Image (cartoon, rainbow, N blue to C red; front, side, top):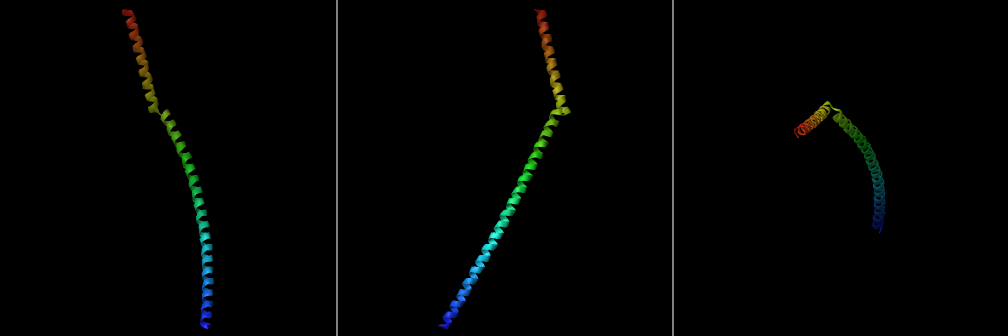
Length: 104
């Protein structure tokens, strides 16, 4: 009987200790989850900010390169060649038209 009482007493202590450990574990787990999700949100915010900044930088660089492309001497030279070619074609066609008129 005494042994049984001792056993019950020890069992009760163990159950209480187990409950205490489980409560501590749950508390620590909640703290860690809150910390984890807080850090995750911070990282996402920083990442989103960086993405936005890079997007703006890339758009600006693209516009700058497009402006360089349209204003570059190489582009201007090509435009001039094309214009001169078109003028020559017009002159030749007008000369050919004038020759045909005189022949007729």
